[in-house]
Image (tube, rainbow, N blue to C red):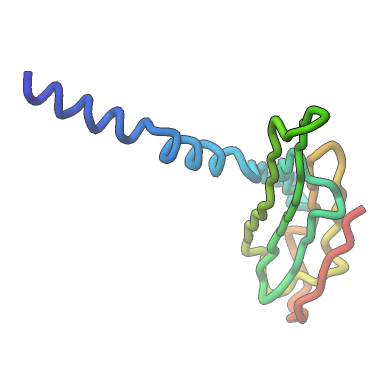
Length: 137
């Protein structure tokens, strides 16, 4: 009986939103699919709630890094006093090793309906490119 009570205490402790919400939110950010279509790699990254202007892709030292940053404010108020005000500011980042021979011109990027799509050839020329940002259409 004592053992069962002890397990319940820890279950309740770790089921607190402090632990679970952060974990689940982190798991749902930047869900990524990577496809090999034969000649290209296609990466699709889900970025719900982000706009094209919030997203940046960088190629540096063989790593393709995706950054997304947003600031939003949700405000509901009555005529005299605030009922609720909420603000959110956050950023996410994810990197993929794509090889040191890949150049900025080799990567095609598009952002539509909250999904960032990056396409680049499997076989890249063997040249090292300085870090540069990739234009997102």
